[in-house]
Each structure stands twice: as C-alpha cells, then as structure tokens.
Image 1 (cartoon, helix red, strand yellow):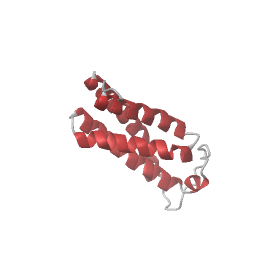
Image 2 (tube, one colour):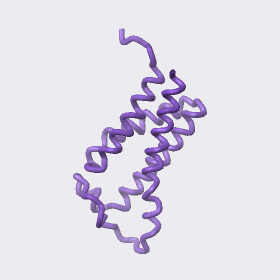
Image 3 (cartoon, one colour):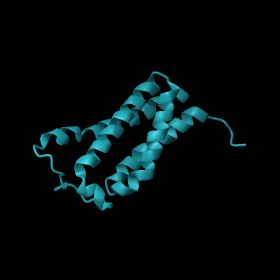
Length: 128
C-alpha cells in the first residue's frame, strides 16, 4: 500500500514538475532583456508577479526542477526526497493564492502530492 501511494506521489510530482518546466521555452525565446508584461496570459491576483513575468516563470522552472528531482528520489526510496516533496508541496500550497487564477491547479496537484506523501509515511498509524 505504501509503495503504491509513493508511486502515485512521484507521478503527481513529475506531472506538476513538467507542467512548471514548460515556460522554459518562453524564457529563452524573447530577444530583449526587458521584463515581459505577460500579454495574453490571464492576470494574476498579485500584480507584482504579473509585472515581472520573466522572474515569475523562472521561479516556476526552479520549482519544477525540484519536483522532478523529488519524484526521482522518491522512486529510488530516499528519505531526503520525501522531505523535499513535502516541503515543496507545502510551500506551493502557501504561495498559490498569489498565483490565482492559475494557482488552483498548483493547489490541487500539490495537495494530492502532499496527501500521498503523508499517507505513505504514516499509513495506518492511529492518531492517539
């Protein structure tokens, strides 16, 4: 049971990580070094993120790499990867409100990964 839940967590982390690595192609496509205003992208609820779209995408790419590394480590059964997965999912759940409306997908995927990781670690252990 725990192994299946860990595999599910790794799959969710990989999917979420690959989704966040997608803007990598947009970061290098722009020929100017000026900040992109994100034309054509839905507005973020937190205006400074919209005004600094290149930095926002860079942060997403970093989070994507961390998710993929955590997924690889979880599949190979390393405890540091479990801690990294819990940490990155917790951070994402904390800051996802700044990224609304697109942050809803981050919240769903991070919540799924966090629940799976916690279920795998504590499985059937009672509360008291």
